Image 1: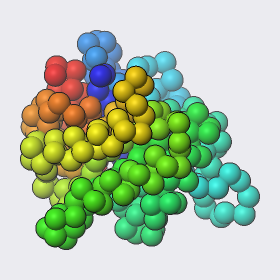
Image 2: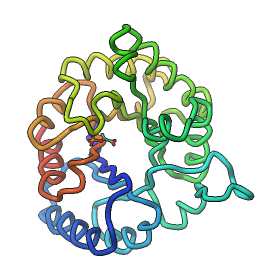
Image 3: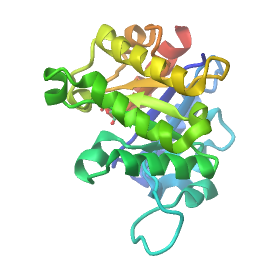
Image 4: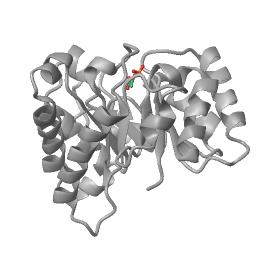
Length: 251
Ligand code: PEP
């Protein structure tokens, strides 16, 4: 399965900073040796800039969130069709920062995934347990519940999603799940996806996210059920992000 390395810029950047970062990514990938898929999920205000910079390159782009609604009186929201106007290939849904700071429930996240798919955009459905949930032995129950909601909502389109396992305790903390810890969860998610999608279908990719960086990427990405990475902090530095892309291409 071709790996996918997706950057999540979060609420960072400016026109000037993005210009330099995008130029460095484009020139870093110009050699064409990358055999993995690469994308950046950027603040929506910068989608036009990112589209202009990446349109004739192998790098895809996307958003960090999408509305669960189609259109109308939802002030501040951005619809899937609006994202499509900027040729977004992906959008994150259910990032733990959305679940935690904006109270997004499993069913809201699932509705967002459904809206994205209906607009032809691949949702990257984020799942992951908190530290308290891990310590009380609930990791598998939590991630399976979160994924089940999305699978249930998207039905036969489940093959078209991307899943990102992001242990909440590892996001932005410098703590990384060990390759064994991550693999254990990915294997459970893979089994759940197999049951939902059937063996014949091409299965969704399962990315790992949580302080992945240039030093730990190769080991994480060599695990059998880790199909790529969702990269926060390290996606803001071109050299680090390109090193992760190189690691994914070398596996
Ligand atoms: C993320 O925000 O999706 C993420 C994985 O962040 P970081 O890599 O900084 O932990």
